Image (cartoon, rainbow, N blue to C red):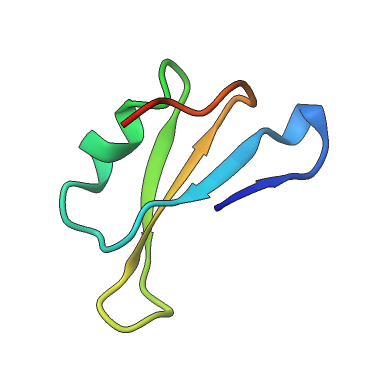
Length: 57
């Protein structure tokens, strides 16, 4: 799932549960920042990154 606001704001992806969140987010390249959103049961991994094509898993 991706969301684009403005070019200066970057993009965001929801990457599932918070296990290995940083590793999953690192696939989005330099400037990607991972954090867990604990508003959901067990937490959800959120990755903020500069907008470009998503990585191939």
